[in-house]
Amino acid sequence: MKKESIFAVFFLLVVQLPSDVFAQFLDPKIKNKIREITSETGHTNRDDQYARISGLSSDPIPYLNGILKDSGVRVYEQKAILDFIGRFQSDGAASSLEKIVSDETVHPSVRTSGLVSYAKNFGSKKNARVLQFLGGFANHPLLGKDSVLLMQKVRNGEFADTEKIPASRSKGKQGNFFIKANP
Image (cartoon, rainbow, N blue to C red; front, side, top):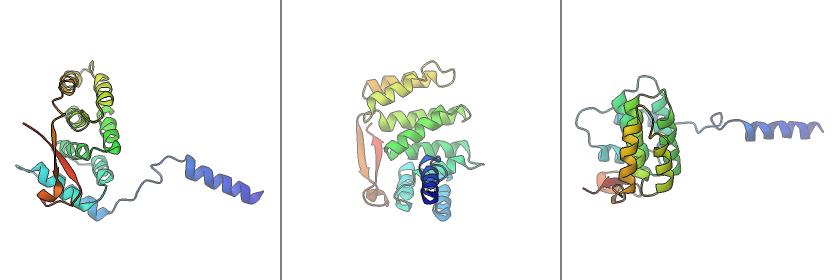
């Protein structure tokens, strides 16, 4: 009976506790390197930055999300991070962008950048989900105008014509891609 109770408690702790408790531990060296890349100023090449970030980790999204949670991250850096998150085009990336855009405590221009990254990178892939999410902000006092404009672009297929460019052509790790909208 005692073994069963211990097993039951252990099972509940492992299964029931929020995933944040058991979140993946991030390598601080990789996180710092990614932070250096995202904090570059001047006329940076986002494609090159994306390729370098891709080369540091097979799944950089937890690192990018971790950097967003750090104090002292400037607005321009947060906007770049949201662009990079969207480029990975995974379900985790979509969820991250949705969470950030929905957070009323996040700077409005950062939230708008999140909307743009979300629509641009998922508009053709997850059209119904994107339109529903953007529609939820149509009457928002700060995001409404941009949300409506992005919904129109998604409906018109403006984000459907994307060209996948292997990161290997930009000094990144083979097999990763970034998206570049066709002009």
